[in-house]
Structures are given as structure tokens and as C-alpha cells.
Length: 252
Image 1 (cartoon, one colour):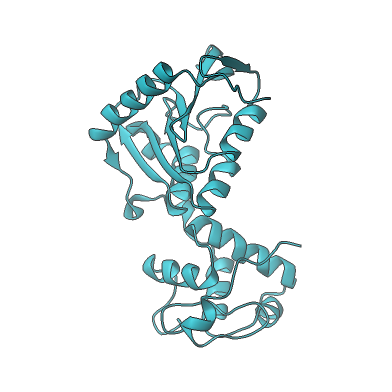
Image 2 (image 1 turned 90 degrees about the vertical axis):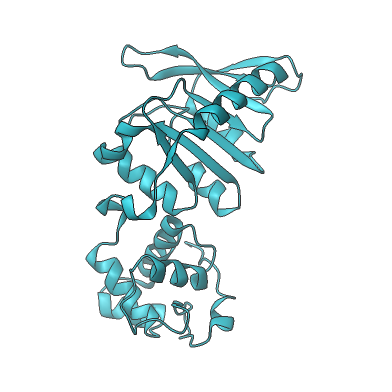
């Protein structure tokens, strides 16, 4: 799909691929309004993998969903993970419409819907009046919304037993190689597990992941290096300044 260039132009986007392409172009902020109280495949409502990628590179997210989403088993977990990654997620009794606003200049709205309310296709607008009206609606609803705090996140957003053991090993100074041997998995699997944990925490480095994991209570007392840092792949790290230079490992 080609993003419209004329200010008054609207383009129809028949699938989620075009919406993801637009989201991939975001630089500053994405506003999300979702009326869906349960998880469903929908090009507007998400959450999507691209949302996590955007958060990792510093794009701000503000997300509005219905109160019922807090207790929807699958959706609550996805929203919890998105919130851990850095999104500002809030709820209201009812969200008035489904919409995305990207960088205050592009709006995505549903066009055709299924019987259960899912969007079949969307329209992309750069018309200033549409952008302004949609943004103002979002801000009005946002004023009365209630934040989803980390303490309210679902248990499914927490670590499983193997992930907790991995964090314990790395925070005590084990290398990726020795942790892999202890867990009986490959080094590549260990690095993917670390990348997943970092993604869920919205951390850009292992140092930041260690701090956030400690804040969440994921690291046992006395197991963290100084500020709760994790060892860098290949070398145990005992100083926060060294850990801070440790970046997300490539999946390879």
C-alpha cells in the first residue's frame, strides 16, 4: 500500500499489511482506540508485533480499550505485555470508535466490518479535519481513562519457571554459554529467551532489563549485580557501567 501524499486524499487498505507498513513509519507517537473487549484479529485494534518494535525504538504509545479488556484472558495478557514494553494503556467503560492516529498526521479508520464488529478493511486519511477530530476525540476520552498499572498485569505476563532460572543464572554472573549448559538448551535459545524477556520489559539493553526485572520482583534478593544487571553474552559482568554497554543480542 502507498501512503497518500495529498492532504485531502484517503486510501482504502484491504488488509492488515498496509496498516503495519504505516505503523512501521511512525517516528513519535501512535494513538490507539479499540472498542474490542476480547482478542481478535483486526488491522486496527492490535496489539501487533510492530507495536513492540516501535516501542523498542522509542515511539510513544497511548492505548485506549474498554474496561472489560482487563479481565479478557487473552487480550489482558497481550495488553499487559504491551504495557510492560512501555505503552501507556488505559481503560474506560466504552471506547467510542476504533482508530489509529500516527504522528498526528495520519488516521486509520475502519470501513467494512464483519457481523461481530471486526474490521475487514480500513481507510487512511491525511485530511487535517479528520486528523484533528479523531485526535480531539481521543484526548477527551483519555481524560477520564484509568491507567493499567504493572501491579494489575495478568499472571501470564510473568516469567515461567525456566525464564526465572535463566534470570537467576545470568544475574549471578553466568555467561550465556554456561547458562545454556545448566538449562540443557542451546546458546541461541538462551539469547532468544533473553531477547523475549527484554521485549516484554521494554528494555533496550541487558542492564536496563536487569533494573526493570528487579523492579518487577523477578530477581531474587541478593542475586543481582549492583543495580540488578544481567551478565553480557560470553562474559560475566559485575559493574553496571560495563553492563550498560551490553545491547540486545541478535537472534542469528
